[in-house]
Structure formats: C-alpha cells, structure tokens
Image 1 (cartoon, rainbow, N blue to C red):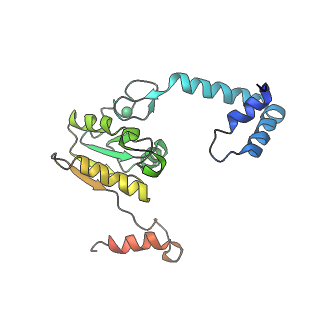
Image 2: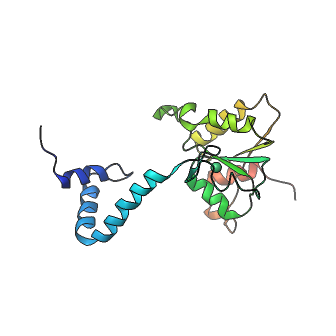
Image 3: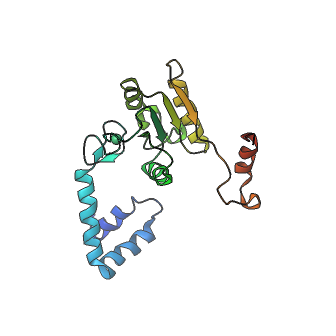
Amino acid sequence: MKKIEVLEQLVEALKILPGVGPKSALRLTYFLLQRNRKGAKILSENISNALEQLIHCELCNNFSEEPECSICSSSKRDKNTICVVEMPTDFLMLEETHSYNGLYFILMGRLSPLDGIGPNDIHLSKLVKRIKDSNINEIILATNFTVEGNATAQYIKELFKDIDIETTRIARGLPIGGEIEYVDSGTLAQAIVERKKI
Ligand SMILES: [Zn+2]
C-alpha cells in the first residue's frame, strides 16, 4: 500500500471543505504551512475545541456548550412561538433582525430526497417531541424559498395538522429599499400574489 505522507494527508483533509478541490486544497496547504503557521495552529486548535465542546441543544438542536442553549433556557423569550429554520446561519440572520423573540428549532438541513435526506435526517421527531412537551401554539416555518425548503415546510405543516397549533410561513417580499427593477422575477411574482390591502 502506498504510504500517505503528512503533506498529502493535510491536502486530503482540506478537500472535505465545500468548494475545495485538489488544486485549492494544495494551495491552502502551502498557505497554512508557509505563509501563516500561527494561524494554522489557531485554526487546528479551534476546530478541535469546537468538536470536543459543542453539542446539540436538547430542545432546539442548535450548537451549544450546554445541554440547553441560552435561548431555550432564557426566561425573556416568548415560549408560545417556535420558528423552524434550516441552518444556524438562518437563526443568526433572524436574531439580527431583532423582530422575533420566540423560540427556534434548527433542522440542520432540509428534505432532499434526491440527496437521500429524509425526515429522520432533519431531526423531525425531536421537533414533534419539543412541541408536544410545550405550550407552543404557533410554528413559524422559516425554511428557504427553494423547492426543498418549500417541500420541507409543507411536510412539517402536515405533521402537525391534527393537533391544535397554528402553522404560518414567513412572507416573501421585496427587500427594504429594493427597487422593483432589480428584484428577480420570482420574488416580484410572489410579492404580487401576497399583496396586502393598504
Ligand atoms: Zn436550544
């Protein structure tokens, strides 16, 4: 068997990153070893620490250092509303808007049968348990407006159709300050369909 050298092992390891092919992996390897050895050391230590210390919150599935994250255990959050998002980045975007004070559930993905991602892969049984064990009366479905995101929202809505809980979908509209001319046609079409009386 061919011996894999240390350098080759690092190149191989970097190839797990999205969008990093063999050439980029090699470039990154040389950058880390030659140009930024200190940064490389910090990076490796941080990856290692994150892997050791971060777990999934038992309630919302987000990354957390504790079994219950700071949002789930906060007494200042509205415990009657839960917002379902695909990824932790979506959760951060919503938090930055300061317009929502309820709870969250992070799916860590979306249904995508073509990629082999089914209901078990997006932790839906954990979501069902969370909702049954709580006083939540509204689920806001904030998955992306992609084919998979819409299908995921629809699937979750169906899951709760027999229990007394309201399911809502975030509205899609024109960005604040956005000029119609520069908005993509899909967004504009939806904005027309979902028009409100003024
Ligand atoms: Zn949590």
